[in-house]
Length: 220
View 1 (cartoon, helix red, strand yellow):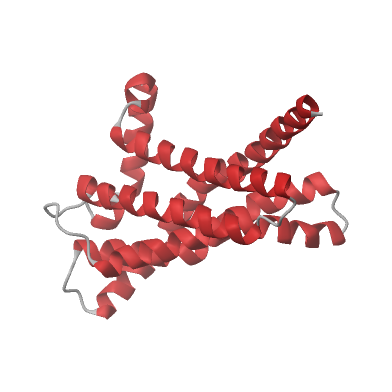
View 2 (cartoon, one colour):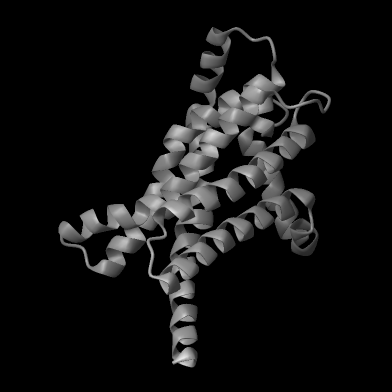
């Protein structure tokens, strides 16, 4: 957010945030920005797991309900989070968020949800056909899909922030801004996505399977 607004460059921000965490981890995890992100991930994974579990016990496919439910929760919370971040870290006085920015955030988050919860099982089947074992195929898809989605969603993210920070910019200036910031912003977003939705997705999948197995064992 600060890099896109021009308030603080990415490298400086990463150094200062890392220093804050090392110096006082407890204070860091109590910060509003950390709690907003952590709460978003808990709500997103919790929604996906609930829909998957209910669908399994009902004997129905979870694909469409999970896409709709998880997207609704993630988009609503992520837009609220990013709106707050833009106000916290932007270079202009907090103001009403443009509908265009909100719409771009919503599309961005829908892409991320689909790449995290819907695409991996589909892609994993192709990996299995190519000779991978089931576990490796699943883990590879869970790591790959959310990361690749950032290549598409990063321009939407940057455009949304630029519309908020610079209301009357001509389109050629916006295109120039996106082109200039794309590589480092995409790299930063992928670096965040790998632990949050890649490794997090792998851990979440194994944890949910173990808990469901124990639940079935106790209910039998």
